Length: 453
Image (cartoon, rainbow, N blue to C red):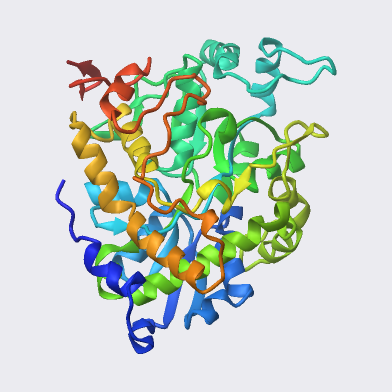
């Protein structure tokens, strides 16, 4: 795929030796969008701690109704940028759903999601789940334990509906990964059917994150995958049980990113550099001293203009624990990671993983070469811009050099820590797709309701 622009012109402005006047932001007044989730925290912290102002930026943060509204706001220019699903810039760039070249120089966080089922489904699952010495469920919980619930629903003539937040969201791909790893088919997309339910045993559909608990309580859906605080909210309301976190399913992968229009980045390199610097500083603050600042962060994002959830609910995941059943609180120190493990670096391999899942489930309708996957990833996840901004922070004494993987080729090591144990090598995306038991392979396509090829 041809890149719509190259990053080399930007590097001089973002990290080269230029006069002080040439580093002033081209656009000082910015409006950034976000969804009411705990991982919008870098935006709130950069604002509240003055990191934006330190960079000469005057930022307005605006909550958005849903991910489509947010993406449209960036595309049409009502928003200069946004807290965005990692899959959104990739999908827009390849023309799935909405067509626009959206890029990111910055990953906001790793992990942060969970899958929750209704109390009814949990009661049907529980006998199939082993218990530990204390009688608590052994984690990770396989989606194979859903089989009794699926059979019960089918015998009653009821559809088994589950919610996710957006077709190209991490949540959709994680839920699909978890289901497929347990032998439950989550359905295909096709060029003329984007319901995602072709051949599905579990019927997945979009529900905005803040509406998840109420929709579960109403019985419209029987489970969902979402970011926090909406899984912990289900526990607090007594209406559901989280059964898997993304640390169980496919951990340590880009979750949310700073999404920007490619032409905005090209025209405003100093502004992008300033934004990236401010957000890096915010994520460092969020993770420093073993999460010592998380309690203050909880108090900040609990405000109505940010996440607007009860601080006690937010605290469950943000401070390194997670509550499954009521009273079953377990340590999960890496549930939310904002800067550790090179979290902010836009790895090519993370972007490739998202593209493989789009192909696996039919959002990418035709087979593509390995080179296509890698080149598309690199046209969206702009590691050069991140490195330039990070180096400037190191040069200014605002960050230690060891926090950043300078000189990386953009590929993480091959990992096999997904719930199904299947190794992922981003340099061989087609071999990876073909190794997954459920999903499209090779040159297969969906025609009508059938897999052909």
